[in-house]
Amino acid sequence: MDFQELEQQHTPGIYPKRDLTIVRGKDATVWDDQGHSYIDCTSNQGVNTLGYSNEAVAKAVAEQAATLINCSEIFYNDKRAQFMDLLYSILPQTMQRIFLCSSGTEAIEASLKFARLSTGRTDVVATVRAFHGRTMGALSATYDPKYREPFKPLVPGFSHVPYNNLEAMKEAVTEETAAILVEPVQGEGGVHPGTPEYLQGLRELANERGALLIFDEVQTGFGRTGKWFALEHSGVTPDLLAMGKAIGGGVPTGAVGIGASIKNLAPGVHGTTFGGNPLSCAAGIASLSEMKRLNIPQMAAEKGAYLKERLEEINAPTIREVRGLGLMLGVELKTKSAPYLRALQAEGVLAIPAGMNVLRLLPPAIITREQIDTVIEKVTKVLQAG
Image (cartoon, rainbow, N blue to C red; front, side, top):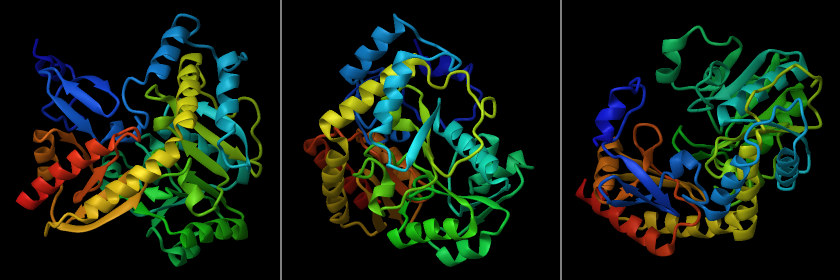
C-alpha cells in the first residue's frame, strides 16, 4: 500500500511533508516503510527525550488503557494525584500548584489567562523570534509574521521586543503589563540561549513593575538543556512555568507550574476536557520515573557537550556559529538549511530547521556516543559538500 498517496488524499495540506513514511521507532532510531533506518535528531520537535518505544512508558500506557483512560477533573483520580506529586518533586520550590492540560500551546494559553486574572492587567510583552504556539493567544505571543498575518486580528495587548535586550524590555513593560513571556532558550527562533544576566534582569523588572514572569519551557524542560529546566542555568524562577513535549514520554501532555504570586484561581475560571486524564498521567509517571532513574539531565549535559564540541570542529565554510545548551543545539549557516536537511535525510540522519538558516539537532538523551559520531560524520559530509 502506498501510505503517502493514501494520506495525501485526506491531509489538509498544512504540513510541509517530507518524502518519508516512518512506521517504527526504538531508542534514537526510526525506520521507514521500506525498512531503512535513520538516526533521529528531531525527537519529534523535542518530545522523545527518552527515545522511541520506551518499555516502561509503553507498559504503563497499556495497563492504564485497560483500566481507565479518561476521568474528568471534577473527580479525583489516583494516577493524576501521583503524577502531580512526582512532577512537583522536580519543579522549582516556588511552584505551589499544577494545572494539567494536553499540550504546550494549551499550557501557554492557561498561563496567559492566569496572568491576566491574577494581575487585572491585559498586556503581554514577548520577544522577537519567539515561538509559543499556534492557538490564538499563543499565536499572539509568537513573533514570525508567516504564522501571524493570515489570522489577524489577533488577541490585543501583545508586543515584541528584541531577545536578550533588557533595556528594550524595560521600555516596553508598563503599568498595564500583566506578564513578560520568554523562552529561556529560543527554539524555533534559532536556538538562542538567554544570558543569565538577561533572565535575572527580567525577574527583577517584573518584580519592580508588578508584572508576572512566564517562562515557556515547552521544549527546554525535562532535561533537554542539561538541567531539569533551563531556568536552572540562570537561577531564575518565574511565576508561571509552561511545560509540554517530553513530559508525557510521547503521550500528549502539558502542564503549568503555578507560583505563590498567582491569585484568583477559583473553580470555573479555566478548564480542559482531556487535561490530567489517567492515560496521560500514567505515561507521565513512567516518563518522569525513567528520567530520574537514568538521570536524563546529566546524560543530556554530557552528550550535549560532546556533540557541541564535535560540531565546532567541523571545517565547513558554510557554518557561521554553533550554539545551544545540552542536547538543544543549532548550527547557524550562511545559507538556507533546507537543502542540507534533505541531504542529511538521504544519509540516514533526521534533523529540523530553526528559522531559515539554522540546522537544529534535538536528539533523544539516550542517543549513543557511536550514533553521535555517525551524525557528525554525516553532517560534516553534507556541509563540506555544500
